[in-house]
Amino acid sequence: MIEGKSRKQFEKFFVTPYLDSIPLNPSILTLISLLTGISTLPLLFFEYSKSAFCLLLLSGFLDIVDGSLARKKGLISDKGAAFDLISDRMVETAVLIGLYLVEPAVRAFPTILMLSSVYLCTCSFFIVSMFSNKNSEKSFYYSPGIIERAEAFLFFGAMILLPKYFGALSYSFSFLVFLTAFIRMNQYRKST
Image (tube, rainbow, N blue to C red; front, side, top):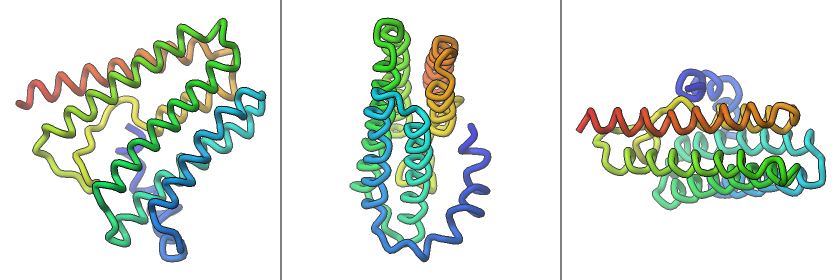
């Protein structure tokens, strides 16, 4: 939701003016975003939560920049889109595992629930993207939802910085992600 409503404005002020000065290929930025994002896992394990949070933000920012750069330079490709999607899921998985490792005995079930919700939502996203006849500025149809990457990162950030609220945040996150998958599939069912 946040991305759909504010991404263009964010890109206009914080990304687009600087794209010409980036000498890297978008795939290199995706790789840096991936490495930065998965670095949150060991940082969370070793209790460097503020550093983990900063790397999560940097990873999310680079994920925006890589796509914008690919579109600006005309380098959009199926290979690049696939690498970006896989990288995004790897970062999310690393963050969830890192959050689990903070207190495994307490966080096991909520983390399994979050991973399950993300898995189902991702499947619904890909099903709608594959079978939809709609177009998007991205290399595939992007089906919006209640919880998208920006919202997920807000939840992850809150879980990292506010560990005493992990339970409430994780269950809320899971509910909203499951709801996103349900709404997406229901809208797709009605449109076909």
